[in-house]
Image (cartoon, rainbow, N blue to C red; front, side, top):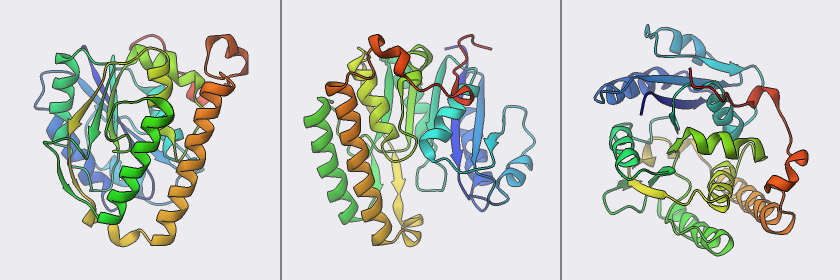
Length: 263
């Protein structure tokens, strides 16, 4: 690995984003590999950009746009601005411990992986997570396994690492910008032959953010996740939208055009 790029989608996180980025810098500095951190401002709705600018480090490259488009769009936007040959993303907000990243990168290189994903169900994970959300997550993963044949226990943790070649191949085909971005990325990657997908342990303390999430919001998210997931299945196996033969139908967004040459 010549360089690692970390994408952090940022949506109204002026109170935590500075701390999150500083923690990421500290964690990644334990590796003898050059890195860059790309926070993507998903809508200029608070002072998140100003808080990031307080960190004087040339390895931080702020990207973003004025109107909120959703997490999936923000992550893809960050991918498009990344220059590393290994690229990952991490959710901000304080629930995920960034100390898992160096171990994930080491695992990625050792196993010559296509993708390494953080997993709540890995035996080494340390999780504080409400039982209701555990049930939702378990049911969803069973659905994912039935629909896409993915032999993994968790797809939704916001910490994943990809090889650049995979992203160059997969990203132009994707459509989902919000709820099922993770599963669209994994399902299409697996379908195209990128099957070296491994899970890694994480530390997740959802108690830090649970107070801001209402049951109504959870139900809304679950409903849209299922709807988008079924749409991915339909496009993948019925329409064959993601196949190379349908390249003319892929929706091109110039802001998400992935750089082919590594900087």
